[in-house]
Length: 342
Image (tube, rainbow, N blue to C red):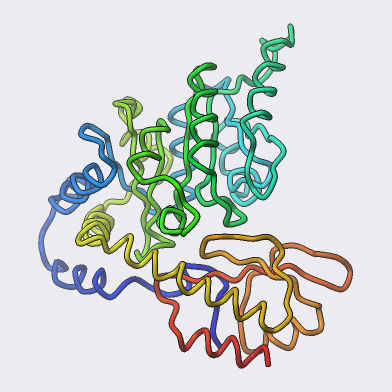
């Protein structure tokens, strides 16, 4: 069976496995203080166009989201997110568990609009009872969104401007950042994205690494004693070298961007296969995640040969599934998909 369930169903890119093997017997300091973590930090800062950014490595996306939000917000503050945002819908209450509320905004194709954000903030401060309410202290976006869609540069600039106006921190979840930046519809670069937000992370787990996310604090704003806070939250990896080696490899010779571009090319071919077999695309995603509407009985048959992720019910007789390509998707995988749809 071939799987398009997600973009982390395979292990790690061969160059990463090779580097981990080559460095396996080196004796290195722990907790991210080794030479590979330091080298990775330098390469990431250069790629982001940031001379003085602070870069820290965490093992996964849930840890990154929960740690960043809880360390950057006061206990009376919450984080604004789309109702379909990852922290709203797929984090099992991890954000609320740390004591900060998720404040949901309406979404369209996975995105919040600058107008809705502005309206929310204006109405919050117009409410004379706002001292008895959770204060909005941060805006959370993901790039790409849960639906594989992208914020335009103009949209991010508008949201960033609203955040500055209301002294909100802007946090961009980049679990699939490479696949967003390498999309043919992306109209901003990594340095431009970094300049517009206060903190973001570069996803490794879904983009070629065994595990790991690189959290980038862009404005000298890393919370005080951040590593102590990471450890308190149970998210500090003793063998930090495992993350440093991987990101050092990903940011050598543009590997991160090359393998991300490959996933986009495979996704475009995959979309064409679905369309050629008469299937409906649920929404137009320009990234590696594609959302397809299947008649239930046909899905049951196809699923015997190809694995997808359930996304949502379309109606009583149809289901929306997600099919994701990745750095490791091959032409053979696509041929197996086409055969299963015959």
